[in-house]
Image: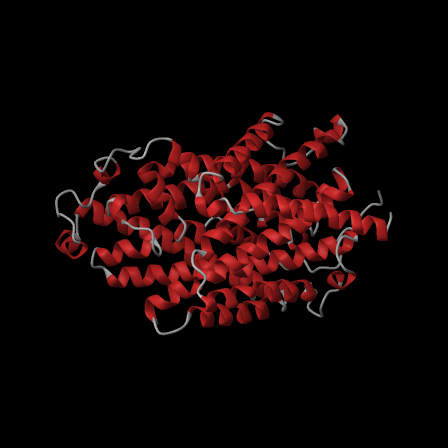
Length: 464
């Protein structure tokens, strides 16, 4: 196998503050703000255990990626590492699958943007909101990477500050019961409406049993999707050996704060069984409690989170196509950089494909978000399994003396690797029990077969 050419052309324009906020923002997205409504319906207050378990496994997955990224920070991330340590097909497959995954995630994000815009402007068609967002963020991504970094820095900062303020505001409501006069507007009794007791008085902490915790893991995994963007930024980080370990090590406690604490506050302010499954629970509960100003602000934050995720998807897709092109696993046109040293062709091609969502939104396809989440979750699970296995291959290809000098080792290797793989297997099995998720168990294997056939065709026409 020929050694793949490392990336030395792209500008290292992402500073430490960009990397830290990109990593932080990657942990807060549509999966939390929008998808948590469905998971709360499934498992009730016990949903926090799903997010805790998913967060721990995600952290170890990132540590596996971080070990390789710090050792050799290049564009293309785990596609490059799979190519180098596992073989040509692994590089081809992981890169194409990651790209496909984030085309799907991009579509999922675009599909719900109109929901948040309609909160203020109900007369604006959802497909118009999706189209405008697509055009604006495509333009951002074909300019200098510093602009992307700045946009993500401020987007992430808005999300982080909003979640912190929401948690503090929620605690204030709970401790002082400031909205008790408004609960009548929610058509519920004023008795014990606000308080931590909501976590156990409505059927207990496990109101639907233990199985829904496992079932909810599929949506939880989608919520953490995009957090591996830390590894993608390695090729453009100004100081990757310092910024990447710092960003990854902060992931676990961020999840504890931004997911678990936020959800506990939400379900304490308002009974979990009355939150409903439409829209964002973060917005709806403040509306129901008669606090429109807070709900309007939160809706802006949710919209920002959605746009931020779409922005990051375009960024990572352009870089992944660039890395694949350098390997010879994608058309050479994607290896060309624009004047601003960004992979313009990869970004534009990815943006063109996600524009299909505008058409689907125009047609009013029902349940489009959850179907897209389903396929994205299956694809993400494959990505993360590939990261775990590639890191095992990476270790096995090294001499012990080199392993001892690794700057950012995977904790509890190899046992943590096997635990992560078992967890992802459980997630795939659980997807078969959810109606909207079952489609991925058909599309997913077909996609794997398609990639294998595409690789064989490529090898027959362009043998190494």
